[in-house]
Amino acid sequence: MSSQIPRRETAGGFFRTEGMKPFVAIHLTPHAKQLAEFARLERHAFAAKIRLARAVLGWSQTDLGRRIGLTQRAIHKLEQGETEPRRTTARALEDIWREQNIEFEDLADGGFRATIRSSVYGRPAQPRRRGRPGYGPRERGHDGRS
Image (cartoon, rainbow, N blue to C red):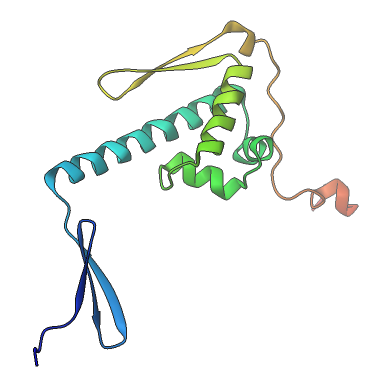
């Protein structure tokens, strides 16, 4: 009888069961490492586009999230490049950019160029709220004095 631990081949690695705790070992080829780095750079470029467009429009993360059906935390994660946006989220953001006359052109070096049409500048920025709705001094019945 062999003392080897059973293993099953998987794409790019193997799956092994030792006792009750399975684990997966993945070995990345140099090409796979390059692809992973490319994906990371793409994610960060997209994150920068989100931050730039939101700043130009004067929207908070919450404002943007409401417009595309995401939470403020989800927008934050996208802006930090922590998560890969779903296709529907990317499309929703691109639709908003198009509606707001903000265009992005991807450059060969991995960067991008932004074009912001003058009609964006003529729009009043939406006022930003601080705190949760219903918890400001007026809503609580205070007159603002300490």
